[in-house]
Length: 310
Length: 135
Image 1 (cartoon, one colour):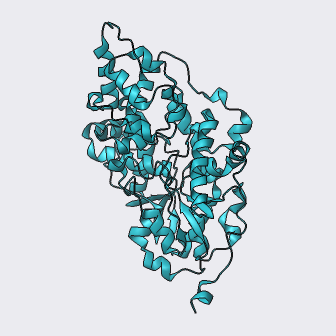
Image 2: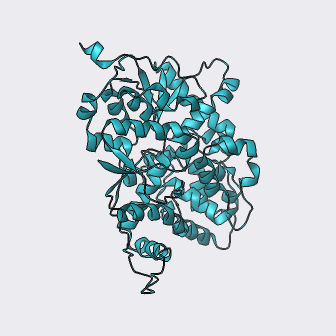
């Protein structure tokens, strides 16, 4: 089965582990991921003022391309891309004025037909036909946990993992609607379906400091430290994330955090797809673990599922 | 917090501009303070989110525009999800930054990121940071 997949900029260079492990895992689920042709950056931020509407042209161009390729679902793994794409799609579907203005932008980048000289040839207004899903939602609603469970190759019962949602996956709820913003369950259910123990802790939907890690490093370290500390105190052996920026703030910043908080021993940070791929029997070398600055040794101990079950 | 009210000539102009840009009704706020209570970077701010919105209600443009809070908001929408009146504070912050744009220089521009750091950072952080904090 083919499925449209939008990796986004960061997955191609800085967090290739998220991309690689997603592909490996989906292959085990018999799903081939197809990237829309000529995709660009989604813009990372949804424009929050009405006058910056042009920021929506980039995500909608990607979505129009998916529709033109015949795709009706687009999955993403990065929370930033997910939030921008889904909110842009909702805006063009529900706001007639935005729809009109943005389709006027989109119409501009259609090449003029050399034969008919007609600019509108082949252009069909994009009205939000594509459905954008985060991979977690796709696994829950379209693949289904029973099917994932039937394909598990490794036993993860020893793994206590803290799910970390961050900001862009849940909020604003009215526009994303993935789960409750203060009591989300989707990540816990996913981890439990894989056989892990999902650690409960109060900071799972707090902000990691986001882009302040460049402009205000101290504030971002503080925010990330609060999350890591809370997860550790509640017994987590690792934190799982969906967003490359959360990963950067919590994994790469741990050096800086340790300099401020001398008693903090460190905590590995993983992508949700790495745990999924590992549970489905992908080799450790194919998870992209070499990008992690906090060592992940000791987390991936091979217990074949069949051996334990029998 | 003590604020000196001045007889500003056209306070409603600023308020109307903020409401137009953000699409939020700033007068809906009744100062419960949940936005500030949940804000992950409130400790670094000179004016708390609820104080910003109060100053907007009073039309005190200058006080709002010189606050460093505007460039501390990470748009994490925690305030949005908790506001009992349904105000999206991140949108109000963005609108105030938008008003500030033609007046000042980049709050955080590409020149301030060293090449070594830029190599290490994920691309998305640079894109989102400059979208928020530079013109």
